[in-house]
Amino acid sequence: MVQGTAGRPQEEADPRNRGRLPGEVWVLVATSFVIAIGFGIVAPALPVFAASFDVGVTAASVVVSAFAFMRLAFAPVSGRLVSVFGERPVYLCGILIVAVGTGSCAFAGSYWQLVVLRSLAGTGSTMFTVSALALLVRLSPPEVRGRSTGLWATGFLVGNIVGPILGGGLLHVSLRLPFLAYAVSLVLATFVAWVFLRRSVLASPQRSQGEITLGLWQALRHPTYRASLVSNFANGWAVLGVRISLVPLFVVEALHRDQGLAGISMSVFAVGNVVALMPSGRLADAYGRKPLACTGLAIAAAGTIWLGFTESVPAFLVACAVAGVGAGLLNPAQSAAVADVVGARARGGPVLAGFQMSADVGSIVGPLLAGVAADAISYPAAFAITGATALVALLAWLVAPETLPSRAGGRGPAGEPVTEATCGPRT
Image 1 (cartoon, one colour):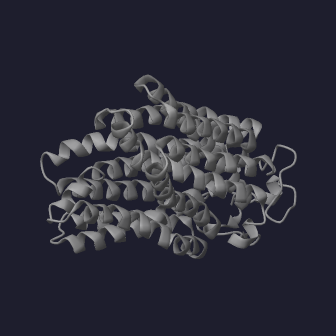
Image 2: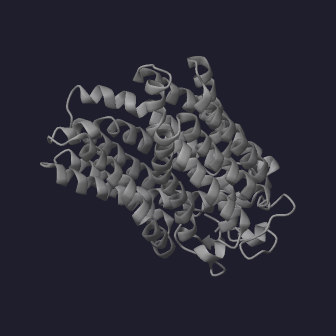
């Protein structure tokens, strides 16, 4: 492939391609969809399979928590691996590690073997998550970063909706079959990603001499990165934590309905999320990251707080949809802002790992504190506290500068104006 004068492929430098998503981004989106389907296939089978070893509910839950704990603990290592070896090798290796760990779960002969193998899968999960985001930073020009991160998030979300449906069917055949099906799908995803990325100049691990290494402490000097950490923490608290742990209990104990409504509410949230994700990415590319992040946080806070005060099913479902729309508006904007801070020519693995860890910490801390509030005070108080985290993040974003290079006021990690030169041309 012929190189342009700025170190990028000549066709990418062509003005006619400006605003187009590189083909490699679509590869990452398709792969994320397959990975998410597999994760959804395993999700309903995992606690049931763990319980088959004659352990209690708490022990069965530990298998789920072990995966999340290893994701959090291994994230700094994953960031370092990306910086040393490059995004593409870590991405492919991470997927294969999850495939091996998950596929081996099907042959686990004891409870503790299952815990260890599931923990191994957690290390691979954080490897491909951090490296995938790093690849999106490298592949996407600043003017389409919102769209690319929005598409990537949509692939995960839709896959997580489809996966449990398929997993439920496989469970009727065998408890071990979902793990094997996920492993096979991951191997296929790895092969597809390798085929389409191996000759890519944009995804090449070869670096230019002008590349810089962006450390976590340097990125923390940037107020927009700090705001993104806070908003991702709030998002993890509400979406990955409280929505899964507290909403089902609220349905049964406050609304006096069966668990079926909890499943419906998650689907309604997902629909609101999908509806908002794609326009959010385009709007973040057109008008800036900050307006969409602030709007999303405000809507998410309103929907989450309102949810705790609902007394009827229609109001409850509407509140879930509103919260989903808020999360959908936020996610592409905050991810694109972090990508702007890192820039296309910087090695920012630890920076991206820190961003991921903020959501993981929120998903662990959120259910604990919200659960204490629900027991000690009330469900409205628990959801009000959850919504308040989004309002705190909103305050952080209000004082943060815009990072979209085409908008005035953006600042780089060292305080310099953000421009294409600051972010670095794509190599």
